[in-house]
Image (cartoon, rainbow, N blue to C red):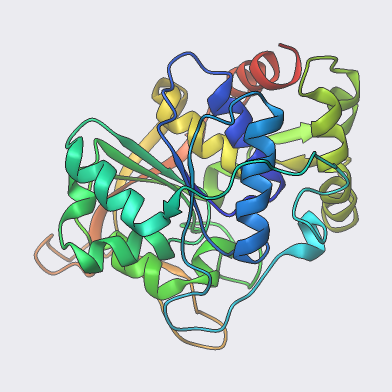
Length: 304
């Protein structure tokens, strides 16, 4: 997993740890929701607290490829983990995040699924250093983009793609086996505050505290007492593809523009042949079985 550990990244990590289908071989971190030192520290603390301090954490890129850094601490809280407090990590980062991606994909070609839930800076840097390395992944599942729906940070852009649009464009052009899980489906999944409060599993108290400021933010903006769980949905697309409806679309990412930086552009021209379309064909999630996804997420993260 490649993460910018704020609240929903933390929930995705807990889902990975609670899923018997997953062998979590390592986690790379990137600046995004909060700066790199916090995303790395949050990841180390969370894995240790969950009893999986054996999973190595690698610190990756501390800034985007080109643009100035942006953050989402107004949503995730100053530390990135909301109101949750975890013990200080005993472990340190095991190395460099980009080197970890390169080594893992090259030594285990076709075996590893890479789930990226933050800006794609680490993936783009790995691809730039060793062209074609992302094609060594069994699959690259990306939480990012808004294909046919509005953005959540600008009128057209989702946060991860806005935070590093140049990286997003490079990764989508890599011809790896990509699955794009954007706001089109993650906005379909709400975790209700009342359901969160009713859960009693080992992770439940942490989740309630971590989600507190996110729920307050989303309640103020959406008028709903709950929150979207964007990053767990992306992991869910890797774990339970049968719950998702996918569509292959020709996509690219706009890298500049006051109103359009980070926008996913879909070439849907009826009169264009595949040779004439702009961008690359990418498998995009367009629909998710909300009931079954939330039932599995609740069972594994909140009630287990």
